[in-house]
Length: 83
Image 1 (spheres, rainbow, N blue to C red):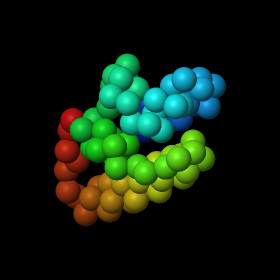
Image 2: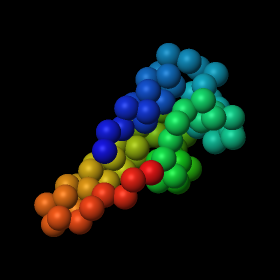
Image 3: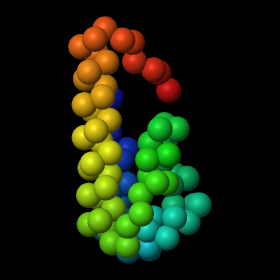
Image 4: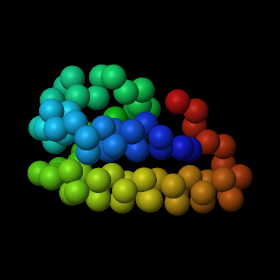
């Protein structure tokens, strides 16, 4: 599973202070423009961070854990869930 949309969110937050503020304050409209899976929405909603650096750190941790779990399922022959 690729995480381009999540990377785009972080990139947008780096260059757009208003978006960054909306993202960190969990304003509902912040993520409306992005096509996210339910799992990604849940991950973003669960992040508790006051800074973009902290937000990115938590998101990176989620991606790393999720990627490893996905690799394990593939190696075990368990089909991926399509969103």
